[in-house]
Every structure is written in C-alpha cells, then in structure tokens.
Image (tube, rainbow, N blue to C red):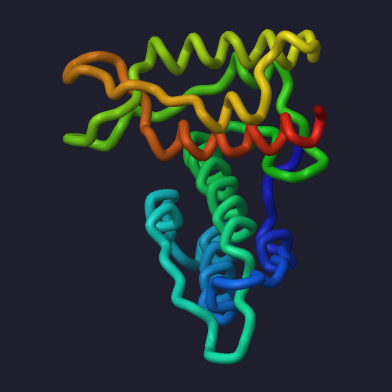
Length: 183
C-alpha cells in the first residue's frame, strides 16, 4: 500500500453543498498547505488539520459539501499520524482500500494530549475486538455502521490508560463509512 501523495491531496474534489458549505477558496488553500506539508515545505500537524475552520462561500455561490471535506480531513489526520510514526498508512483512507481484521489488530492510537481526558483504553480495545470479529466473518451478527456511529466511550479516570479522542472518533467515522459500503 502506498502513502498518500501531495498530488492526491491536490486532485481531491468535493461535491457542492445543497445549503451550507465551506468556502471553496479557503478549503483549496488549506489543501495546498497539506500537500506542501507532505513535501516538507510546510509544517501542518494532525492537530492543525483537526482544528481547521472554514468560512461560508461568497454570497450567491455554493460551497463545498462540509461532510465530504470533514471526512477527507479526518482521513488525512490519521495519515499524518501514521507518517509521523513511520508506519504504513491505515487502510480505508481511499474508497478502494478496505480495513481488514489484521489491520484492526495492529491499530494503535496515541495517548491524549497532556491535561486532556481520553477514552478508556479498555473500552476502545473491546470495541476493536468486536470490529475485528465483524471484519473477519462479515456475517449478520457483526457490527453495523449505525452501531458504530452511536458508539460512545467513557472518559478514562486520571492515570488510567487512555486514547486520544479525536483519533478514535476519526477512526469510527472511517469504519462506519466502510461498513456502509460493504453491507
């Protein structure tokens, strides 16, 4: 599996929003910064991407579909985290990639930022076990996309093992989309 390239980031296209949308010029400029980061010419972090905000399109124009842009940025956050750690990217970032049972068993999330609560690692681990079983058997008793969307983890007690909430949430979005495609 290859890593995302700056050209893939630049070529990414988004549908137009029906009502509210993101300003296309702002999104395109940010995508360019992401491509430059992948080339080592800018220094965006996954946190910078998670915190990105875009204004409304100019009056009388339709903006980019917010959900499509947000999903793409979630995937890029995961990609940047894996690149930062020197690991191969996580499957599922592209429509043609499929997350497998083995991929789920290898997943590792970061600890939450200092001073911030994270999801209880034990609960996330139990979810990953159930997801791995779903992907291994692909039967009717496995997780559904709707169940994934409604999954909620408790915050870990201070000093307990915990995972970065944004990383886990982005992963859940990715999993739900894949389950929608295969079921």
